[in-house]
Amino acid sequence: GIAITEPSAGTDAGGIKTTAVRKGNVFVLNGEKSGISVATVGDAFIVFAKTNPELGNRGISAFIVPADLPGVECKGYEDMGNIAVGRGSVYLNDVEVPEENLIGMENNGFYQVMNGFDLSRLLIGLQCVGAASQSIDETIEHVKMRTSFGQPLANYQGVSFPLVTHYTQLELIKWQAYRGLWLRDQGVDHSKESSSVKWLGPKYSVEAIHECLLLNGHYAYTKEMAHEQRLRDVIGLEIGDGTAQANMMVIAKKIIGKEFRSVPVKK
Image 1: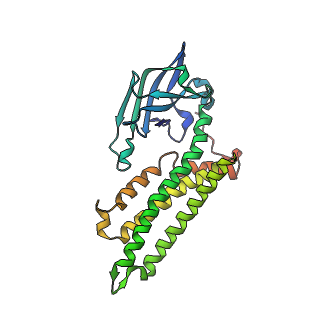
Image 2: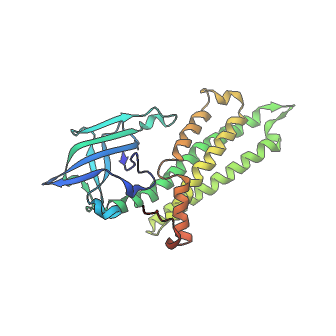
Image 3: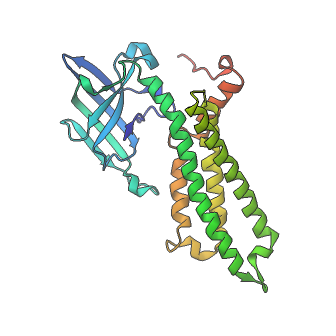
């Protein structure tokens, strides 16, 4: 699992409070990570901690932390969706990690986080589109067979047009994601493509699955059909790896300019 988020640091990844203090040939980690995928089932975590708090974002490092090390404690959540992910909190209390578990260079972790986000945001968007596309495919078959007032539901534009809208939106997101992955392969900056896929992919997918649930009628509100599970799962992915607002900030910085980005108010 990737352990970045903390109770007081989500979108502001540079605001993490977990520390890693070097003592001889080990680093001693202390802190709490929250909302961590596979927290209850993972064998190890990539933990981001501040090795030099005075440097802010530039003082963050990444470590491989086995889940069975002394001082590591994991507690799961009762989430409404993505149950198999085993999301939860990871507590680090004087956890001694060998220096060879440091990933990359010391104090270079923030760059690793941002670079990783550019990939994971594309993949999350595609994950959402996949779930929604399956619901659309199933619903298309349903409206062809289900009749109302002597005609298949598919004959009514009030049914077909919304499906066309969702299909078109999902296709656009899918190809934007493919473009972002291609740019990444070329070694070209693709942050704005990743962020556009991340904020619009889950949004359009939630809307599409919700529409499919309604078009399938009351049976779709039961757990006998998969639409309700997909809806719950995709809603959770609207949060992970940056909310819509956080990703819009990334895009704004890229297309308008860094000098016009939001600047935290100093107290």
